[in-house]
Structures are given as C-alpha cells and as structure tokens.
Amino acid sequence: MRLTELASVIRSKNAGPYLLTFDVLFKNRSCFENFKNSRLMTIEKAAELYGTDVDDVVSVIFFDPADALKITINRPVVSGGLGDSDIYGAQQHAPLLDWQFDLPV
Amino acid sequence: MTNQKKKIFKVLSPTAILGYGFPKDSFARGMAEKPDLIAVDAGSADPGPHYLGSGKSFTNKEGVKRDLTIMIEAGLKSKIPVVIGTAGGSGASPHLEWCANVVREIAIENNFSFKLGLIPGDIHPVIIKTALNKNRISPLDHKTPLTRETIENSTHIVAQMGVEPFIEAHKNQCDVILAGRAYDPSPFAALPVMKGYDKGLALHMGKILECAAIAATPGSGSDCALGILEKDCFILKPLSSERKFTRMSVSAHSLYEKADPYHLHGPGGMLNLEQCVFTQLEDGMVKVEGTIFEPSEVPTLKLEGASLDGYRTVSIAGIRDSLMIDTIDEILLDVKNRVQSFFPEIDMHKKLHLCIYGANGVMGVLEPEIQKAHELGIVIEALGDSQDEADTICSLFRSTLLHYGYEGRIATAGNLAFPFSPSDIPAGEVYRFSIYHLMETTDEDLFPLIYEAIKGAGNETD
Image 1 (cartoon, rainbow over the protein chains, first blue to last red):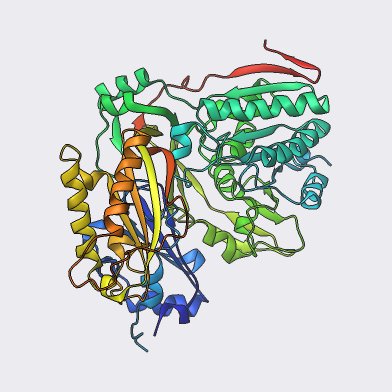
Image 2 (cartoon, rainbow over the protein chains, first blue to last red; image 1 turned 30 degrees about the horizontal axis):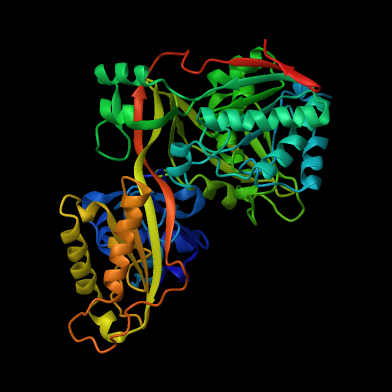
C-alpha cells in the first residue's frame, strides 16, 4: 500500500534554512496507530527513501496529539544557496507519496 | 464584565503576515469580542536570504499600509495596543524604517496621533565578536563555526527577540509597537506575560496566532483569529463562518515548520508540549492546556545574517532531442569544462549551476526517480563577482551549449529551444545566509527602545 491510503496530508517545508521537515497527518487514530505500530518508518527507512546518509536524518517523531508523523533531514544545500532548487522546501515530499509497503495486519 | 474582571486576556491576530490582507468582516467580529491586544507577525525567513541581505521587504507596501491602517484605527479607538513583530519581513534596520515610514504616512493621511515604540532587532558586530571570543556562539542545525570575517561580511545581522523588549514598550504605554526581528510569538505573548499570565500558555497561543487562521480548517493565511488566554488554558476562536478550529487542525499546527513538535525552542527557553491536551469545544473553538515553558540554564538568542555572494544571470531553455537527452549529463559536463578552459582562474563549480527540469530540477541530489523524460527544461545559473562577469559566464555557457557538437548529434542547427529573447536575464545581487547561530547572552539591553510621538499633522521625536 501507499501512505496516501492512510494519510490526508503529506507535505514538506523548511524548518529553518538548514533543515527539511516532512509532515504526514493520518486520516484517523486507527490509521496512525497501525502505521506507528508497524515500525515501518525509521531513520534508516527515511535515509533510504531520500538516498541520504543515516547521519543526515535528524529525527523521526510520531506526534500522538495530531496523529502525525514527522521526519526531518538536513538540507543538501542551505536555502537560497548555489544549487538549491527549492527555497521554501515545499516540493520535496514525492518519495513519501511513491513509497510502497506492506502494512502488517 | 470586562476581560480583566473575568481574568481572561484576548488577542486578535488579523493575518498571518502583515500585508497578506484580511476580510474586514472577520476583523470587525474580532473587535466586537473586545480584545486586549491586536498583534501581528510581519516576517519570515522562508523567502530566502535575499531580503535580509538586501534590506528589502518581501511584502507589498500597499498591502502593509491597508492592513496597518485598519489595525491602528481600531487599536486607537478601543485604546488597546497594536504590536508588530519582524517589521518589513526580515526585521533589520532598513526593514524597520520602511515599516515605520508606512506608519508615519498612515498617521498623516488619517490624522492619527499616538505614541510609537520602535525596537530595532539588529545586533552590533562588536557584540557578536565579543561573544565569539568568549566561545558563546554555536552553529544551529549546521556545522560551520562563525568567524570574524563572516560577521564583517554580513550586510545585516539580527536576533530573534523574546517578550522582554515588548514588555518594556508596554510598560511605557506605547500605542503602537514596531519591532525588528522577533521570535514569532513574542508580540502576542508579551502583554499577557507582563500581566501575570502563564508564559508557556501565552507563548504557545502566540505560536498559533502568529499564523492567524492557518491553524483553522480550512486554513487561511489571510483571515483573522482570536486567542482567549485564561489562567490555566487558552481557547482559539475562528472569526469567520467559513472556518473552524478543530482539535486536529490546532495540534497539527504544532508540526508546522518545526523539527520537533514536542519541544519548541525560543529565546530564553523551550516550550514543552509533551503534556499538552487539545479539546474540541462548540462553535469551532479549541481549548489547549498543559503547555510548559522551561527556562534554559543559559539563555540564547538566535542570530540571523546574510552576506553578498555576487551577482546572478540566468538563462532558460528547453531540449526535445532524444539523442541529446540520452547523454545530457556528459554534454553539460563537457560544456562546463570548455567554459572552464576560457577562465582558468575561476572555479566554475562555484560559478555555474544547471537546474534540469525533467530530470532532478526540483529535488537535486535527493531525487530517487531515474525515468527518462521526453523533454527537459534547463535553467543555466551563472554567478559572478560583478553583473558583467555573471553575464559573461552565462552567455558563454549558453552559446557553447547551443552549438556544441556532442557525440552522435544529427540535429546540427542548434541544441536549445529558447522561450525568450533576450535569452539571458541579469538577476542582480545574490545573498546567502551567512549566520544562523545561537548566541549565549544574559544581556537584557540588546534591544533598546526608541519612542516617537506621532502627530497626525506631522511628527516630532521626543
């Protein structure tokens, strides 16, 4: 399955000029709990999806009050620096849309 | 009964960024609630380093003037303060002055008289160098240590001020407070904190209100929101029938533009949301309780600076030839090397950047997709120490690529489709974030207040 089946919001944005942060807001508590309990999303998985070093994944946090998952990685280039392609970091979420996985029943 | 007797404090937030506008009806509904304060955030670092570096505003003057006129008129009429944080978008002295001039213009045109408090957010380089010498500066979210040279090369350096400078201005009964770079919640939280309300709750409420109705659903950056602060909770109230706050919309907002939603760092301490409870109330209102402010042992301020990196010229072109698309990476490298040979003294890896839409133009090195596109868009970006140099590098790369006889070429009339004539666009000064560091400080006088008696018919400074 894909995250779009479980989540109503999947987005990316800068968290300051040096970090990119991804928010996944799940459709409801059970979607959130199922995904969280599956332990499918880890620092290693985030690194794999974005082709970065594990050290460049700052954090993977499940935020219970909002049924949300938050992933934060180092930006490859500081916002507005030479070679930056997305000043606001708003179009970096696609690998999360495309990720296919099996959710344990 | 007054808010004071009810022991509640109401804050009206008209819009997410000063100048983005708001419906007059929503604002009127907000004023009918008899707020104790009108506050707005006027800035963001999101649009990139250019605005801080150049001293220009990223918001439109007419938009800012329209918003401020409505806010100041209402504030004066109801005798409540109007507070603006991060004036002019980036909050350095030219931005503050730009916004102050808008305020002065409004006063003259509308015959308003009031006491204006100005709080510059700039930090003098000498103060930063002293802190650097005492090892009190560390990089934030990156690893580049600050140097004296970087401090000297930065055109503007600001720090995000906490609630204290605003409290000082409130104690001196300013009607309108215009601050330079501020921690986003500060303009919202200062007055209630001064009046004894819980700092954690006041800052958390400010954190949500600084985005106005963005935390509502459907969210909007150009609609009003009301915050009602009580002793042990705060309530968010929508001011338009189109939208409401929901438990999810408010709690999810804690995630926005932050790395860790449980721990929100700011000047002097951290907001801890671990015990936070969000409760849905009727009429689209949400109650929030349990936020705790944890003061840091060593208070820090976040420094932001930008420096001039040179000048930019860009050229945009399309490629539809499948033979060329097959070997585009090699072709671009060959052309780059050829341009390099014309300028051996310049490192082209630091001066030329190629953004290839249809390949990895949006995600760069983070792009996992390798599928070949039927057409490519190429943005040639050249940097120079002068505009002339940038123009020259861009022009040379563009013309070389246009006629480059790559291996296997069969279309010999030209390799690029240009959408525009002229093909090259001089884009002016290029700034970069030079400083993004934390500075340890216990100095309370970093943000001196300037008072100005604004008179409708003209001004005088006292």
